[in-house]
Length: 417
Image 1: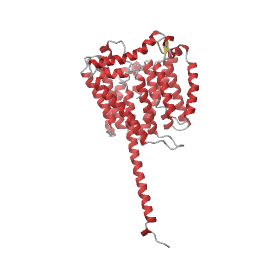
Image 2: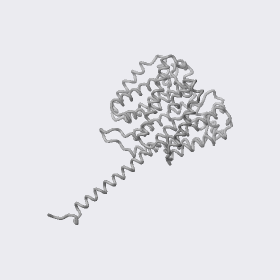
Image 3: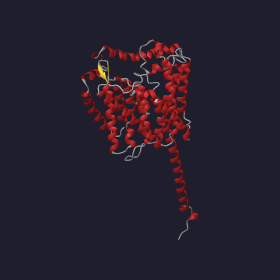
Image 4: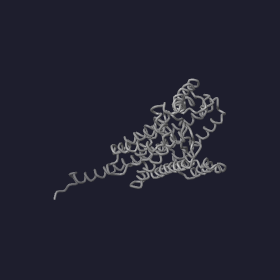
């Protein structure tokens, strides 16, 4: 996960010469095969992801841009993520292991944000749309919009810190994580990420117990954060309301999101079954940039195959979240929150953010979809097993109590003194 998110071989190019990620992945696969921990989970969501991956290959094979470098790299990278997805789903066997994975995931994201923030303070940024915008330390997803999206997708899991590490220490870490995340989002100048941040705060207000306290806190912190922003960043975000206050390029950038959707419809009409092929957006449309729109991307690059398989993934993720919530009811007041239920809620929030930010970003082939799906598959499997154990224990307790009742109240066991 650290190699996927932080990508040290892109930060320090000397590491790229030894292919660190390839060596580590080969070692991981060998350790996985030799560990004897392979447990296949027959899950509808697993098959949905496999179907989507198969669809990626089919659409690529039938693409007119089959031999383009961008398509080959995208398909190759996606297949690597699929392998890691399978390892993750089949190797984790307990809630304790899943907790460690989630804590490691959040720790890696925190390190990634802190490193990027340090580089920003040292003068590393990109000047775009009239402002100096913060970027990630990597190159693959270091673009201001991509970096801000990565921050938001991980922010949905921040409540798990308090669940995994209860008490004051967990609360301090949780507030610290929120603080660095909000700082990074503001400094990127990403307007779509600002919308996502508002969506996240709204979702949190619906989920927290002390809703009034949360609303008051947001009402106080919002103006404070705004006042701390540089004036050029304030103007940048204000263009969401009044485009005329910013440069013309800001308005063109916003309109390009809708243009990506319309181009996706055009590509779908030209090749309704398989689209133009994954990673073939630029050569197929002649556009200088990618789609910047999830819905246009899935229609245009994968056609009907992509629409059906991707819709199945989203539908099953929603159903799994609801299933876990039904299996793990609200905890008794005064007790610690249930980890699996909290994880399901977090993934539900992340899914909403992925779909909302999908209007302004082409996130179809992000590793985020596969990792969060793996977390959800593991959580549902563990929730079902724990529920079955609890039901069987309740049955045993009832049988023991029934035996005691019969012995106490059955006339043949009752002898008067």
